[in-house]
Image (cartoon, rainbow, N blue to C red; front, side, top):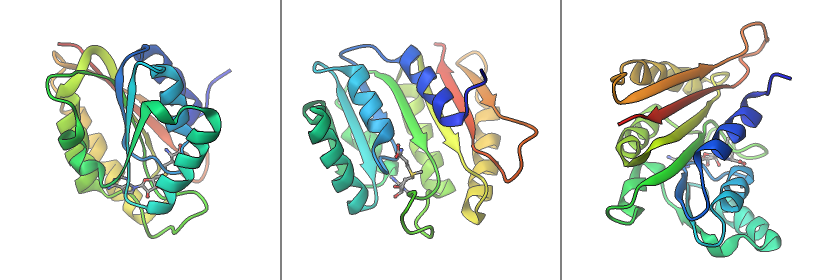
Length: 188
Ligand SMILES: C[S@@+](CC[C@H](N)C(=O)[O-])C[C@H]1O[C@@H](n2cnc3c(N)ncnc32)[C@H](O)[C@@H]1O
């Protein structure tokens, strides 16, 4: 009944994104989010994805090829801190997803970091279409994750409520720091 964090993040993206949208995957990883985004934007839309690991980009490219979704996806071997530089001018975003932490099955030392995560999110929020969402799945069960979680929760808690609605979706009785979701809706 209650969706786990990743499933809930996907339910939110399905509400935010419509065919033809331009959307951001801030952390491509194994490409599961990228595949969902590509199917939501359809052939007339664009997913712009970022990862600092070449292996993640290559693996996701293969996944998209196999599913026929590659034409509507741009993958960049770059930090999401630079995401705003890759956006077409004067276009609004239909949504964005960040799935923080390290690549499952990869090097656990290579993780998202609070400064680049905050920079990326703060630059993209004003580019959202009114009524669309930026969604973050937060993992705090590793050292960099704890600092990142604290910085992120501080930052989103202070967003002006006239401009953004901010949701935290979290299970309170689970052991071992399960992931939780932050969702930010642009209101004006
Ligand atoms: C939890 S994984 C993402 C999972 C992915 N969304 C999926 O559906 O499979 C986190 C990814 O973030 C990437 N990453 C870390 N720092 C980054 C940065 N500054 N910019 C973009 N990607 C980054 C890591 O290389 C890793 O692949």
